[in-house]
Image 1: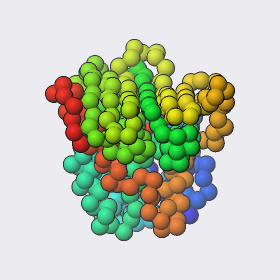
Image 2: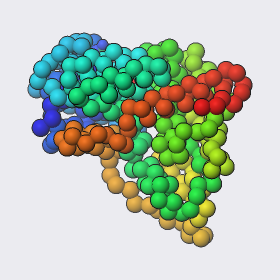
Image 3: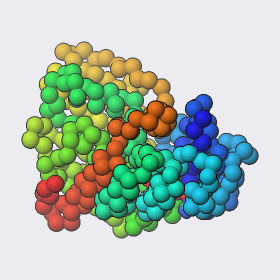
Image 4: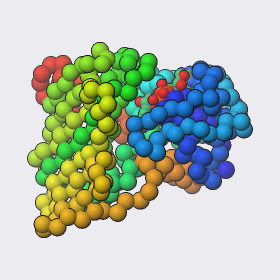
Amino acid sequence: MIKVGVVGIGMMGSTHLDVYQKLNTAKVVAVADLIKERREGRTTAAGNIEGQSQGGKDFSSFRKYEDGMDLIADPDIDLIDICLPTPRHLPYAVAALKAGKHVLVEKPFARTAREGEILARVASESKGMLMCAMCMRFWPGWNWLKKCVDEQRFGQVLAAQFRRVSSHPGGPFYSDGDACGGAILDLHIHDTDFIQYCFGRPRSVTSYGYSHQTTHIDHVVTHYEYDNIPLVVAEGGWAMQAGTPFQMQYTINFEEATAVFDLAAENTLTLLQKGERQAVDLPGGLGYDHEIQYFLECIASGEKPEVVLPESAVTSVEIVEAELESIRTGKTVEL
Ligand SMILES: NC(=O)c1ccc[n+]([C@@H]2O[C@H](COP(=O)([O-])OP(=O)(O)OC[C@H]3O[C@@H](n4cnc5c(N)ncnc54)[C@H](O)[C@@H]3O)[C@@H](O)[C@H]2O)c1
C-alpha cells in the first residue's frame, strides 16, 4: 500500500482525494492546507468538469498539517501529491524529492521553464520518481488519438485543431496573473502539451491573444508549425462571459478519417470515414483517475513514468513561453 500525502486541498487536491478514495493500491494518510476548513474537509470545491472534485470526503483518519513543508517532513509517507498554486510547485517538489519521496506535481510543471529545468535536474539526482500531472495524456479519447497518430491508423495527420474555452474560474489564485500565468499557462497548456506529446516539438509558433481577467494572456490562438503536418492550431482561454460552459474539443483530419472529440456532445468521440459516422467507445473515468493509477503502478513496479517524463513537461512550459513571446513581438518564434 502506497502511503500518500496531498498538499493543497483546493479544487485539484480535492479531485485527487476523490481518485485515491476509489483505489486499493494507495491510501491517503495526510493532507496539508493553509486554510483550516480545507485541511479538515469542511469545504467542498467545484470543478468545471462533471465528476471532478465533488467533496464530501471523510478526513477523520488523515494527519493534518498547515504548511506542506511539515507534511513533506513526515517520515511515514511514500508519495507527495502537490496540488499547490503554480509558483509553489518548484520549492515543494524539490523539498519532497530531497526528503526521498515520490512526487506527483500538478500541471503546469513549474511557473517558468527555467524553474522546470531546475526541478527536472533535482529529479534526475533523486531516488524518488517525479511525474507532472499532465492529465490530457491519460484522458479517454485523447490517449486513443495519440495511439492513432503513432500507428498512423488513418494515414498522416493533415490538420489538427484543439479548443478549450470557458468563463474565468474566479478565486484569488486564478485572478492573480503573476501566480497562475493567465489562461495561456494554466488552461491552454493542456493543448500545447498534448500537441507536443503527439507531434513532437514544433519548429516554431505564431500566436495571437489578449489579457482580460488577469494582467497575463487570458485567450490565445496558436499555430504550431511542423514540417510534416500542414495545420496544427489550438485555441484556449477563460475570457468568455460568466455562464459560458467549459468546452473541450478537438477535430483531427487524417488522410483517411476525421475524428471529432467534444466533451459536451452526446457522443463524446465521433469518427467519420467513407461517409459513415461512428461513435467511438471510451473507457470510464477521467484523465485524473488514469494518470494517478498509472503513476502508482510506476512506483509499485519501479518503472520510470515514461508517459510524462520531467523533460517533456518542461518542454510544454517552454513552448508556452515561445507563444507569449510571439504575442508580445507580433512575430513567429522559432523553438
Ligand atoms: N490538471 C488539471 O486539469 C488542473 C485543473 C485545475 C488546476 N490545476 C493546477 O493545480 C494547481 C492548484 O490549483 P487549484 O485550482 O487546486 O488551486 P486552489 O487555489 O483551489 O488550491 C490551492 C490550495 O493550496 C493551498 N496552499 C497554498 N500554499 C500552501 C502551503 N504552503 N501549504 C499548504 N497548502 C497551501 C491553498 O490554501 C489552497 O487551498 C495549480 O497549479 C493549477 O494550475 C490543474
